[in-house]
Picture (tube, rainbow, N blue to C red):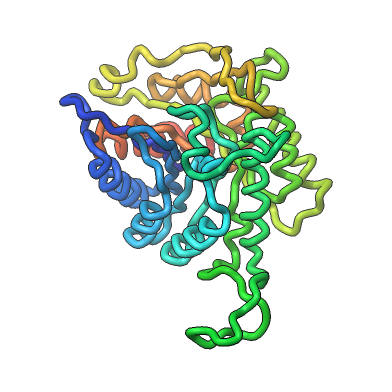
Amino acid sequence: MKKIGFLSFGHWTPHPASQAQSASDVLLQSIDLAQAVEDLGGDGAYFRVHHFARQLASPFPLLAAIGAKTNRIEIGTGVIDMRYENPLYMVEDAGAADLISGQRLQLGISRGSPEQVIEGYKYFGYAPSEGQTDADMARKHTEIFLDQLEGRGFAEPNPRPMFPNPPGLLRLEPHSETLRQRIWWGAGSDSTAAWTAEMGMNLMSSTLKADESGEPFHVQQAKQIRHFREVWKEQGHDFEPRVSVSRSIFALVNDEDRRNFGVAGERQDQFGSIGGSGPDSGRAVFGRTYADEPDKLVEQLAEDEAIAEADTLLLTVPNQLGVDYNAHVVDAILKHVAPGLGWR
């Protein structure tokens, strides 16, 4: 059995064809979609984070709101760009959102991808140290974040505080005891997957990765997952890791599906460049879109090696088509595709 959730990029466009024309639309509809998918039996509601764009940006208010409105579904990100983050403030935000949700947060973080502006993290007050790259800075922020999630005291208390302090050095609050084991890293290469395992984070692999062999996307991604698990075992961590992959999958079960995605299936992997710096930059392979009748999807997805290796599947959804249609997209996979693959 696999966990099946959705991943929304949270686009909005002030255009008559879009059902998400403003930031308010996207935020409120994201809450509604998470509730709908929970009711349908889905397992996760995940959101992409982009800055300087008409997309979802600050994730924690949204995650906390969804946590307050739902009871079971996992709530996460895919991914937060750590180049932009104050890791200490992020510990507080993440702890609060996790406790509101009853410890259902699954927080995906990463070095990030090319953004809307040049070196946008500088506008947030961050810049790499001399001789370091933006990827190095993201990893440093991540290391601080992970360390502080352990909940150890580190700050010298005021001898005359406004409120009584517990004994010893003080930690950041609110603290969630188990959140450290629910942090994921979005890895785009085999080497970053290995680093993810070394750091004790779960692996999140998207619809693109560094092209390291010229093989089909799903084959390279499956090898990345196996490499991650091998390194994890060598590290001897005290919990079992999770692995997610994201896919664009549309079951064509009615005329509206065929109008929207009838020409989207049978696409081949695409090869190109994602730019940036670090091991995940340069030439990349982009995974295909799956769109077909349910029985044909079952056949096609059965050959996807990376989905077979993962325990969690995130379905990318076209959020501008509205809550009802996106709930239908997820429901069609749950009802008409997942059982034929043994996912349910």
